[in-house]
Image (cartoon, rainbow, N blue to C red; front, side, top):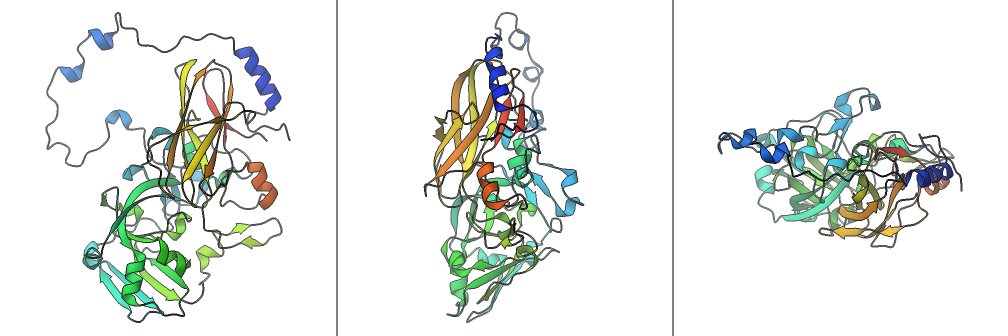
Length: 422
């Protein structure tokens, strides 16, 4: 086992040695002082006047004190923001549902603003009856509500060769988790009558990139949705308004947005976005293909580089999220010392297949430096691997499907940093 460390340049032995020295430092716990506290003794501005009426905010927005809770991009990642990504602020969220306005974005040709009155969905190819649906046609089909995570295949991709981005928003923020309302794709395909020779479908987007991916017919008939709502409201334009495909547990680029056509065929199409991109390059130069499923993964969202410990030593809450494209998350373990000892985290909230799960671990922090990690296990028994183990298998050339264990180093002041230990 190597003693290499990430950005800090220190070894794990040095880190833990420093921890023992710092452990004796006493810090004052952050408790509000009742006596003389102006927040208690003075009448605050909001208690001295009438507020806005019920018609002032017809579509509710967060408090202005939460203005910092936004999606963010990394400008140097791509040449132009119209074909780029913005990241979900995981460190600012709790529970398992991502607010619609904070769901990460990934476009290949910018946001398409589709007029719902002009919207059409075509099903063609190896079917008995080629069909075209309007949005109103789709709304007359039986619908279902399901909670799923959507993760980009490149989430954590910049971390393949070592710690790069200092914040879980940027290392793990190409994911969101919402309740989708939509029609089982199976019903639309059955309406068209799929021929016995059919084995694949190719959904196509209506944006300028005309995004296409090949999907096995078996998956399409199993659990895919043609969705038009997220968290109860219409899809946001950046999420494919008015209709997108939902492909539970599989990489996000297959969830084609602004869905305009589904072709049924007998073999995969091997278009650009499933050959030159979204394939995993191996050390020998060959590329893994059809790596659609997103394996079990977790990350501690607080403390983390964007969410340091500010209250000093004392009772401390660690929280994070875990998910698996193969089922539910049965268990998450947390370590405070870089993997020497592990503690079972407390799961909280509903547990759905192919959905985010929330975990907590509470402890009394004594002010010593920490090496925080989380490790997820899903309902198949799969255990989230270390980054070192992934690299042994796949080398350093790929950027996709990095589900390795993430490490945050927390110093005596509670400041967290993205590091790597092995």
